[in-house]
Every structure is written in structure tokens, then in C-alpha cells.
Image (cartoon, rainbow, N blue to C red; front, side, top):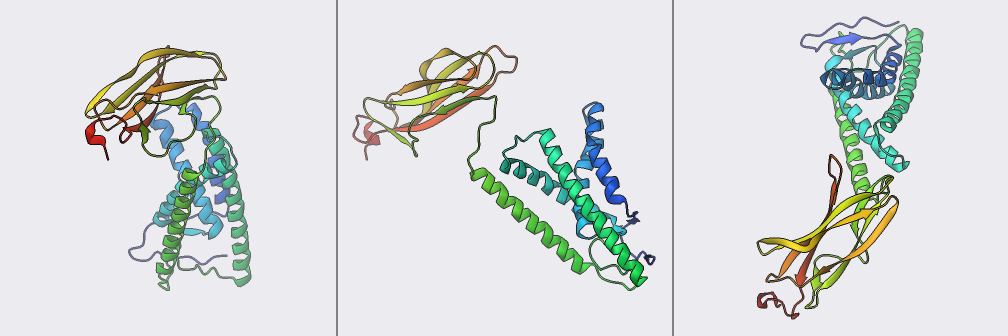
Length: 309
């Protein structure tokens, strides 16, 4: 049993929902894959985006503080913010579990989250209904989601709770993203990789009068063989030129090729950047990979006089 709520002057529109609203939202999210039958473009986005950016956050609010009557503007705004945070958290959860991030895995993770949140919201609603039946009243706490009652309860206190919750979630998300960026990442299956090999050089590499050899590797973990164009160039002193003649490289599936690049002393400049580029041939959309290294003439190694310490 609940007391009727009076709409206050200047209050935003509000809506009353049934106790089964968490399950309605969960059903809408579970039906999200059906939007695949709609042609791609604005039509599919109109159907999918509101569900994706509304349901997870709405169920989270319902599990925290269920309401039969809510301030529509506040509820929708917080639901969108929380849904966006859940999208980011889903990516972090999949990374921790070492599951490849894709549309299917992200949807499955969010669906499990929505199931848990819907169950929590339904449980909270049952408890609230039992308490209301026992007390024969339904006093609504004054917060940002509740419609002010005729006693004029102020929602400022609840608004601060909402702001603090959003800030805490944003800080947690930022910390998780920073940890993810600094953590080592596994190379996804089915890839082509170009990288320097050998000891890792820190900062600028010094090149003596006899030059230096930089080892690199090309790894292809895809079925079948493919041809690539391998080129090396340098830029420095306002100039750019080829460092070595381009070569055609054929790499088979599940194969790694090692080679070295001979880097001479910077000609006429103190320092320059070496760039090695690998370009796939024979495909409609060419893929390209590149690595670079900064080198400089060794002091006293016969380079330009102005490069001496």
C-alpha cells in the first residue's frame, strides 16, 4: 500500500512503475540481439542505443534504491551515466578474465550484470512492499530520484549522494583504465606483428663510425602465406630518404622471420629517426605496420663537428 504523491510546483515530470519493471527492462536487454535483423544504420541505432545506454544503469539504480515513483529526468540521466560506466567495466572484467573483447563477449558480460541487478531490484521491491503493508504507509526518502511529497521534502541530500556516487565510479573507472594501460597485453590470436627484437634500447641509440645493426622480426599467426613490402627510411636534418631498397617478403602462416637493419652513422646530421614499414600486398584494403627508433652520432665517432660534446 502506498500513499499518493503530490506533484510539487516546478517539479520535473515523474512516472509510476509497477513492481515488475526490473524484469521488463531485463527482457528488453535480453532481446537486444534481435536488432541485428534491422538494417544497419540509424534505424538499428535508434533501437539498440537506448537499451544499451539505459537498462544497465536503470537496473543498478533499482537495486540500490527501488522506487515506484521517480523523477524522470534525474533517473534517466543517472541511468545513462551508470550504463556508460558499466560498458567500460565490462571491458575491464573481460580483460582480467583474459577473454577476447568483442561484441558478443561484451553483451554476454552485460547481460549477466543486468540479471544480477534485476534480481537485486526485485528483491528490494518485495522488501519495501512488505514493510509498507506492515506500516500501512509509504514514506519516500528525499533524494534525487524521489518525487517530493506534500511535506516539501528537499532532494538536495539525495542529489549529493548521486554526485558522490558518480564521482566515485568515475575515479574507479579511471584507475582501472590506467592499470589496464600499464599492464602487459597479450597479442590477440590471428595477427601479423612487426617489432624490434633483441635487447631493448632506452632513449636514443648512439651510432659509431661503423654504424649499427638493429634486429627486428615479422610474425604472422594467420592461415596461409602472404606477401609484404618491407621498406626502411630515415628522417632528420629536414630531409627524408630511403635507408634501404624496398624488398618483397613472403611469410607463411604461423611463421616468424628475423632480420637486421644496417644503420649507418647519421649522414650530415646529429640525429635522425629510422622507420621500418611493412605493407601487405595483394589485398583490397592494405594493412601497414611500422616501427621506429631514434639514433644519433656517437660523440667523437667521426660525425659532424657540431655533434661533438
